[in-house]
Image (cartoon, rainbow, N blue to C red; front, side):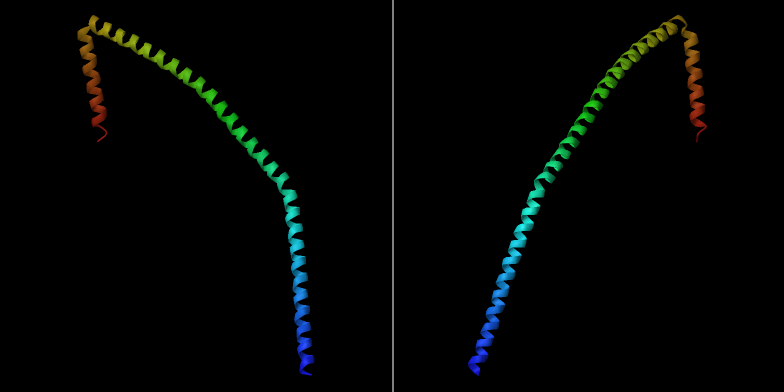
Length: 126
């Protein structure tokens, strides 16, 4: 009877081992099938992602080029305006020098009045 019990236990162990082996084969087959399905889907997904990334980079580059061309135009206009302002300042300075040389007494009175007015404005803020 003891022998019979040992045989039953060994049969159960063998059956359990066979079950585990079958489950292992099934899990392995399922895992490989899943990996294959995912691998089939990955290249189209990565291609779409790569294309989206390329499109995004192109949009950014186009925007930068557009801003750069606008900036160049703005810099040119600003440079021309600065040059014109400098020329106008030179003309005004020369005109002021001419007026001071022509009417020195009046120039001193105007300068004194301007100084007095500015000092009153600044001292009244205290």
